[in-house]
Image (tube, rainbow, N blue to C red; front, side, top):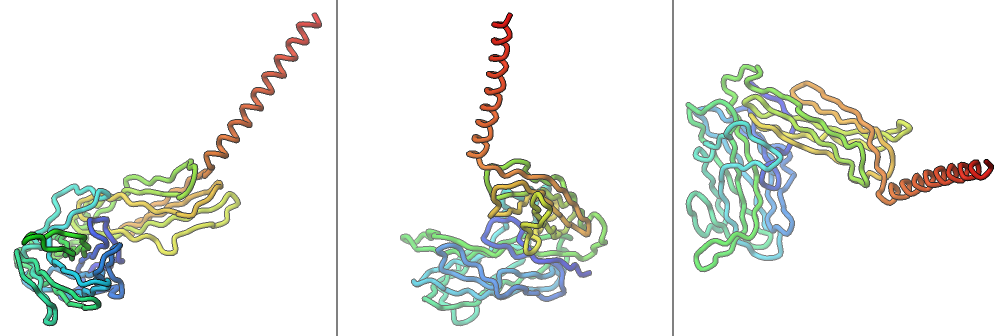
Length: 324
């Protein structure tokens, strides 16, 4: 059974996520021109996204290109670990990470390996040097149905009297999907949009919308989130160049946001569209973006008008009282 899905991140610890899903018995790589590279990080990794199917009884894997793009030599620790989700994802069940025990990593010849320890490989990399690291996952014949999660981390470190002192890390988050026996029913994938939110009043931009999506099934799915903003005359002033694509992990709730960063003062009609598992959810709301200084000016003007009206009425009452 094949699942066709768009590419996305999943809101997990690490710079960028790789998602894994059934596309055959071999790993399928997409967007291999993208590299992972954190701020001040010397290491670039590609591809940034990998997708593969966990087929019980078979072995699959993928190769990563690792480059030292900094100006100094560096020492790198490469390993795998259970994936940790960020705060925007709330797991309703216990995420499976047996895939870590099924997976080994190896380096191709040409890399300067300094040691291997507890399944992790330590490498010394010169400036502009590149290495290739491969992970291989041997899925047991009795592997459970559903998703598996792991992270391949690349950690710059220094040796401090025999102990490893981490400097900074970057990681590829990998999801393995065993869809053997999938029925296509709600037990496999089930989407619920719990809350869609558009602000009514802001003092300044950005104009930020949020949505919380629940996956009540056992397989990951993609959710597409798009915003469109119209001015008071009905003209489109902003829309996503491409809908923001998000992965919602199996048995989890995920909060995600989308923003118009350059939103300025004005009155806008904001439309948020969420698509998940073929269903579309839309809301529209008016949003007022009025700077605090303008609010103060308006309030002062209102206060002056009220004061003037009250004062005039008092003067009129005094005149009438004096005429009597």
